[in-house]
Amino acid sequence: MAGLATSLKKVIVFKKKTVVGIEPGRNSLRLAAINQSAEKKMELLDYAVIPFDAGLKNDSLRFPRFLKSALTNFCGRARTVEIWCAISSVNVEIRYVKIPKVANKQIYNAVFWTYKKEVSFNEKTDLFDFEILGETTDNGVRRIEAICYSAPIQEIKELKSIFDACGYPLTGISIVPFAIQNLLRTRWIDPGVKNLCNLFIGKDWSRIAVFSGGNLVLSRDIKAGVISIIETIREAVDSRAAGAAEKPKPAAMALAENAGAEEEGLPDDDLALKLFQLLIHNQADATTAFEAAAYGKEEIFQMIQPALDRVIQQVERTIEHYNLHYTRNSVGKIFVSGQICSNPKIIEYIGKQLDLPIEVIDPFKTAVSFLENVTLPHAAGERGGFVPAMGMALSNNAITPNFICTQKEKQQLTKALLFNRVAFGLLALLLTFCIGINYWQGRLIQVK
Image (cartoon, rainbow, N blue to C red; front, side, top):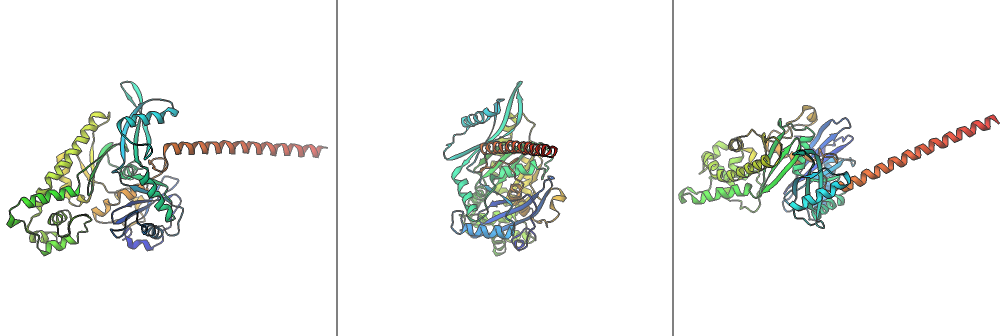
């Protein structure tokens, strides 16, 4: 199937303005290559999952060699591609702010100090940047809207140096919320509503982000994820009668061991982990496995409801905060992503509790013309796993916050381009003047 590691052996013909998006995981890389033509036509060229040993960390001396091999196989001989990589948003602070309408040269300071009042950060260790979203009116007063963020400089430098070392320098570094913003701004995904909430349930934590008109306006992380769900199952198992708290029979255990779980720090024979995996994976023999197990599917679902309810409460509070403090329309839909999306009943439960339409975010659910040259993955979990990589592959400095090209650097680049254009124009005028003088003198010589 195109997009898996086996497809890396083929040579991809990269066209002009091709961007490769990368999401590093705990034990795999996800990559996507999208062609962005001058006519604003987008086309997915390829995608891939490249596994590596769980012990191979970013700071390992072997990681640049692995990364170089992976990118060489994926990109072929093309070295002109732009590469954007995602970093974790756990250590990135994001705030939506409004400032009075001021002159352009005063915007930076106004945004900086407004953000500084809300978020405590160290300018020496944290990068600060922002993006202007537009203008709004509050009680007749014109204001400028901006989304601000700060991120650890050291983490950005380390990631950049890894790619420099392997011969594939990065064009940009960003985070997954901005990758989803790319999917919305480019209309790769059309949610059908102006305001939506994206809920990502990860391993150790979850992220709740609200988008309005394709712009990220609110993002927060909560310390609740798959691990807390598994802990809820463990508590329920422990409280059950001793005679009923047996481990699943071999058939169920075999299914769980083949479920491809990536949870670290949990024993291989952890009953709570196995029950969670049995719940979220829908293999063909799942019914037989559940019949053979000591716990039924419905019972396991009831065990995880308290943990789900805690996440749902946080989503409710976030949406209420958004509706209260932002002068916009209410949230109209929930986009959900993460490992739990494999179980439709969990998705249905979340949507019912929030009383909002809910949908699993699918980057392959887009215009057919964008996907003409690839074979689509069938599993919903596999499709959703490419959200960050494909979102990053839609990046460019015009629409994507870039941690290695801030507003100040963009302004300096704009000034440099303006200076070059003015200098080129003056040289062109001077050359035209010299050609005119030469022609005039030639005519004088002919007359004499």
